Length: 319
Image: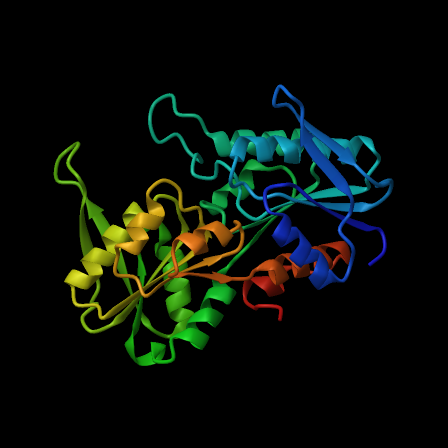
């Protein structure tokens, strides 16, 4: 592919390499390092003049450092006369701070959008935004890819009796739309877990809306951080008679006590995508399985570069 350069930040070099391998091109040369005082320094190692530049950086690990590194890389390419700069951000940082949910709360997702635009990004490619309205925070095109086709494919291949026995469950009301879409594609029932607060400051009790007796329950959510909600949801499903429980999450952040909670829970498997590096987590928990989504990003980059439609990827997995 002529006139294309793919750079990878230090947050997820493995995903960057997989994307380059799938596109059959070499990884562009970039050196990122830190000064003694902690400042980030980026050196773009080859000419980008007139090139179509893609910078891959996920919002995980040291989130603030990685975001700053991405902004500096975008700016460096911009002032080196790149034709177009696309930020490929598998996990959008600060995506949970997307509204004023209480007085004086910041809308940090909008701030990140402004920073990316000001740095010089012309286009954003991301996956499963926590709230799809975040696309409206930008004045530049945003392609929000979905993990849904890969999730449906995994269920069909790994749960042979899904047609007769499976039920897909959303652990909160916010994910109901995502879950109903997957339930329709698989032609199975869906359920919803509703958090009920009797009094202020009282721990929420969970109410299952739907029938799980004797079913294989598949919990589906866009991200799991400390895993409190999904582990509590799994407990509720066991109480209601579910015989097996799987969790499928797009972004497995797994911070704090998450792995300990999973290890002592009822899950058969926790399935995540590789928008975030999962090697360490897989060593700490043998129930974690990974769906590779590098081909979806590679195909989105190829189609964007060639001026083709990306909407095919919303329904299909490009193997």
